[in-house]
Length: 162
Image 1 (tube, rainbow, N blue to C red):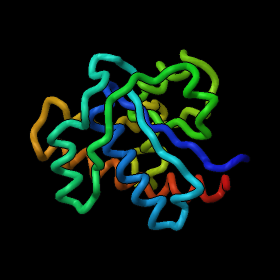
Image 2 (cartoon, rainbow, N blue to C red):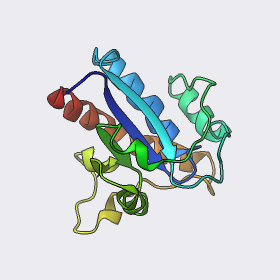
Image 3 (cartoon, one colour):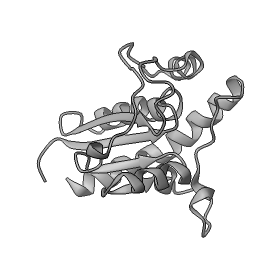
Image 4 (tube, rainbow, N blue to C red):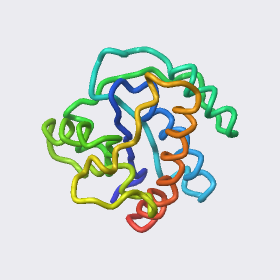
């Protein structure tokens, strides 16, 4: 497998959940000594937020928890060409996973499937990361907690793949 190993996180508009996960995963890969071996980016299923920065509430929650959400993020839509160019594609919800699978072939998995304490059920939707968009700061805190809970599992999975 050629380096770097490429991970993409996908949500709806690429301004809340997926950029939060991108920031957290970059941090965790760096702390695991894998920063030079793994690249992480994010995108959205929709193009409605194209070009916009990370949501101010998502940014505030990340900063409050010691993460550095660099100012350069701009929302973009996932493309069919993203699937084969990424080793691992992490969907935030079952609807995102279905949309990605319709785009083409790739290793699409549910982000929360890497959380050892995530709810176990037959349906993929039980692994959805809650959308904080219509909520307040507590919803963004809850979203970050779900993202953080799965992050170490993603790192362990990628470490094995390397």
